[in-house]
Image (cartoon, rainbow, N blue to C red; front, side):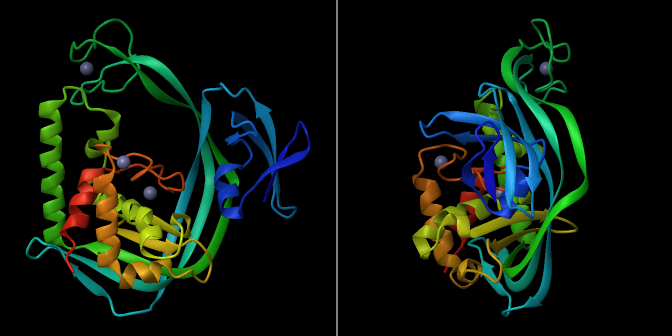
Length: 325
Ligand SMILES: [Zn+2]
Ligand SMILES: [Zn+2]
Ligand SMILES: [Zn+2]
């Protein structure tokens, strides 16, 4: 897909269809860098799939509005490619189960949220009902603590597309499951970390918010997925962009690694066959990163299909370190 600047008629970037559907759908706010390295912003107006082009109008680069696509991802398991593998963790009875399957990945962009980022007064006590709600005055009406000016995101509009933008392809997938013993350990670990943070820091920093907002298994699975993707170039001759990851919460919460291209590129298979090696490299990367709870060098990824939610470095790291072999 060619991205066209409507003010000049020139192409300024090229991207694949998958990313175009998520980032330059009609109405999307799109940020890019110009030739001088400055941030420029656009609003996408047309997405011409047949012509392989998207048209974007430049907008004020200081605009605080942005869009979040509403996506739906489905991973369908078509057939087993190998006998599932059990990965024992260092705690007795705790296990991960890996299954290599031939799967179908379907991505639907069904609409978007138009949001605005603003600084507003709010309560920063995590246990308070008014936590991170826009408030006014000097003190929180609920808990009485002093209000602070923080960055808040407000949704100003929600748009549903009449027809969703859909892509699908078939490729190898690695399904990651945790057994009940591992689940219990993860829950205990998250609880332990929450208690520790609450004891040490009176206001929960945003980087730790996931611990209060998501389920422990989702945090653990999402974090190890990202951490392993960061380790891809250390283990095999591929880039982190060649492998995708998704956590699905159904009756059971599971993670899926899948190759970023149709018919596969070997990444998922490598993760399945060399999981121990990936886990060790991923653990080393995370440990050696100087951040505390996760940063764009070791945990957050622009390509994350789940908005980098439910992530926590120490929780992921503790699982990776428990992988034996
Ligand atoms: Zn409060
Ligand atoms: Zn980091
Ligand atoms: Zn992710």
